[in-house]
Image (cartoon, rainbow, N blue to C red; front, side):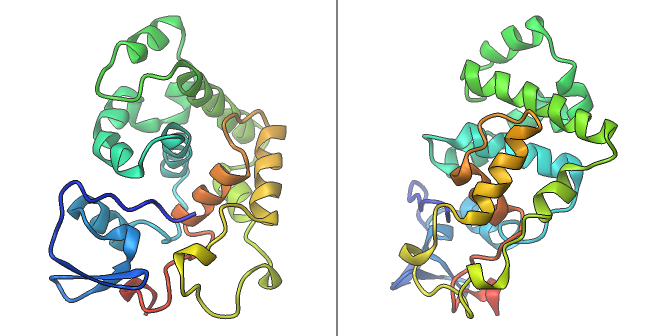
Length: 210
């Protein structure tokens, strides 16, 4: 589902239903307004196809760490996550041991959640196992693009209409779990699909969708 809007660092905006028009004159999905970091993420990353293997693995990890938190919190901590997790290089993270887990649990600049840290390591190992079988995470995720009858003919016009999970995200979650991935239920899988551009949930009228 689209990210929840945060308004900790407001910019000048005009609200029209579920779109926000900033002082740059651009109409954005409402969650993409209210903070410059959010606006940049909305404009330049969210919903754009991400076919970089390391980047997609990093996004999967961050989606899992976001569970229960605002996405803005994760965006603000993203540079620290990248530094702490070797830029989310799956080969490097897959080799993490007890000392690395202790290092990460002591790092106040990231989200210190043992289950999520363990999941990131397990997911890196699952990516490496995919590679050993001649598969990639990119191919697996994008293979679960939804069929036409699962999506509206046009774009969604309201944030309330955007689902939190779909049959395709449920299938992706099952496929990932079968391959050893953790923290990847249908909701996380759909958020990954949105963020990585497997689906494009920018609203009708959003400048990115024009």
